[in-house]
Length: 193
Length: 193
DNA sequence: TGTACATCAGTGAACGCGCGTTCACTGATGTAC
DNA sequence: TGTACATCAGTGAACGCGCGTTCACTGATGTAC
Image (cartoon, rainbow over all chains, first blue to last red; front, side):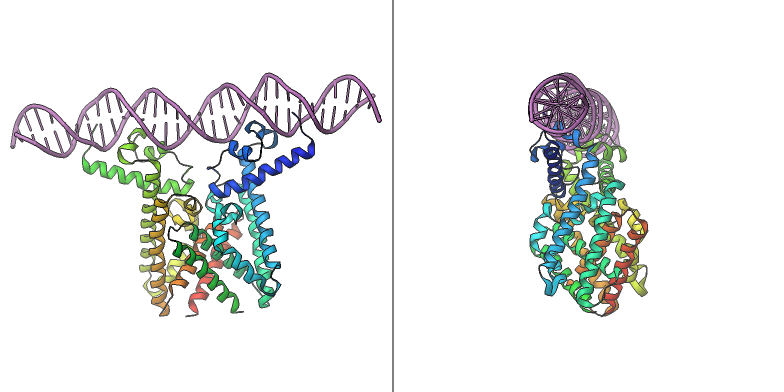
């Protein structure tokens, strides 16, 4: 039966939200539409009343994941005004973030998949990545006086790579060491002025 | 009909080889066994005479991809004895490497997928990653006199993250800038002694 | 404000398709004598 | 070395299954008067 416009919009948003978590946990190909819809409290058939295709949902889910985690980062930073960039690094390179794939950074969780995805998905990633470059640049500049866009990009690369690598390791010590060594190196680089 | 033991071993190796390229290009879930076998000049049915399951092939293909690309890196480095580490960085962070996903670094091409994979696949990655840490450590030490394992790991994180990010960008300039900014930053870090 | 009807979000079953896996069969290879 | 037979890599067709997608139907919502 028909539901109110407000309810329908709410349902749609819930589907995107659920998908953004499931995709990060198991990849685009690892999650079926049936599972997404059921986790949103709906049935499979209704999917095409809200989305044109699975690809459309993927693009929107990436967008959503990028936005919520960008807010996560700025929240963590603004909660520690005395060392906001340090707080961001500590959070991003923590074992908690490593273990919460579904709620964490989409670049590390889905980067390899997005490299093979279509332009709509890459566009969502690009927008989110640009925002992150800006945030990092501002936070480093805040504590160091200045930060180039290039340094900010390299720092982001180090963060993403370390998180990605730490998740591919069987050995817990080595996994942790990727997080710690990256955090140390970034602090050293940024501290140089 | 039966083929000679030598021929069978050769066929098996070709399947692993083909799979290691196809998986890097399109992910574990994006490639079917039929396609792998056909690209190796065989038919689908024969697969289970050589492998216990698709998962077994995935683990072997990762192992193979890790080994061949590690050799690739040491070859590039030893071809430039006057600046072997610089040559490695130039190669890894080149647009050619970025565009040759099927022949390139499995960590960037499959890192997100491997984070979700089983222990056999992670073990293959771990071995390959450990080897890379050692290679980078030695090459930096060679030109700078010394290099800690931690610095080597952070450098690897930067390399992998930059390549991964460059592949998720629609914009060609931004994509390239991830490669260049990472190369510059690594050179600066390593140059500090 | 109340009534009559069109709209359309959601349901549940079905569609064709490609997947990983299994199996009966073939016939050259490997082996025992 | 030559012969007889067992082995088994590779073939091709089939299996059940879950996938993305489609569709007839439902009935509360939204709208026109």
